[in-house]
Length: 50
Image (cartoon, rainbow, N blue to C red; front, top):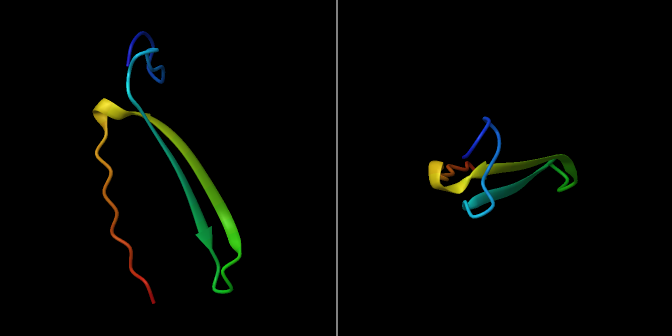
């Protein structure tokens, strides 16, 4: 990040994540879009199915 908090420099890596949550009938009920400075993030998922 450079400058003020929440800003990413033009040449900084950017992690963009789109997550869609589905209901029991496989219909989308929520969409989350996130953008984070890539050099400061580590992405890890643990998903329980069933």
